[in-house]
Amino acid sequence: MHTDLSTVSLAVFDVDGTLVDSQHGIVQAMGEAFVAANLPNPNHADVRRVVGLKLESAVAQLLPEPDWDLAHRVADLYRDAFVALRGRLDYHEPLYPGALEALKALERSGITLGVATGKNRRGLMITLEKHRLTGLFSTLKTADDGPGKPDPAMLRAAMNEVGAAAEETVMIGDTVYDMAMARDAAAHALGVSWGYHETSELSAAGALRILETFDDLAKALDLADGVKA
View 1 (tube, rainbow, N blue to C red):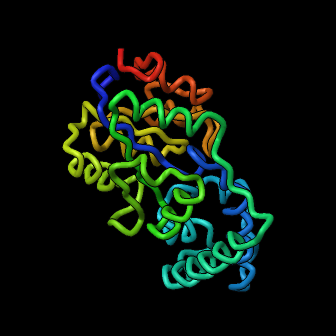
View 2: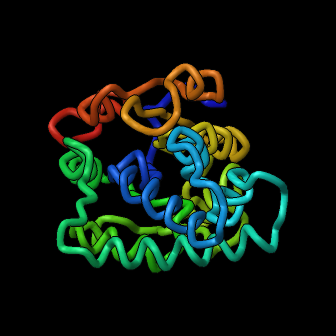
View 3: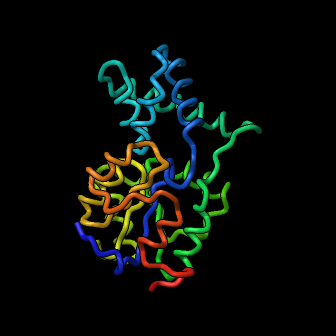
């Protein structure tokens, strides 16, 4: 894995747990889906562990016993529950502090922005539109586009779409799946401290650095006042 971030021209972000604090909604919708399928409500910590995976894969890991057909059925129930939850007036899914400012600073610096997420495209677009982020990203890769994390296919597709080499690409995420995806795509990986996996796990999985706040991202990429140093 490359260790020099001075050549980065493409920054690809995970969404849940990295840009957006959606933990409460994910845990609640997953619980409702399992109850609707007459299954035990999964432990909150276990749900956090699978955030970032393709939904069917995440559900499969939470089932008491392996059952792919059941995983697909519960995944559909989860989608229904999450759509209903998102439609409530009291639903809150905030950006993490400093996220918008960091994205705009990278954009001003000339760094191309992308997304690689376990969300489906519909869910991603709803999130981006809610936070007025749609115009910032040049490439959007979702669970609808092929194998999910930690498979490197999404990240490779993002790099190919914008013409960035692996040594010019950094993946920013909060789970070991993000780190493994970057590693297997031969790209850089940066972890964040505020997400769903422990920072020690992110480092062990290949994170070059753990960001304590979004201000650390500019420092990691040698940005000064939004300009590449």
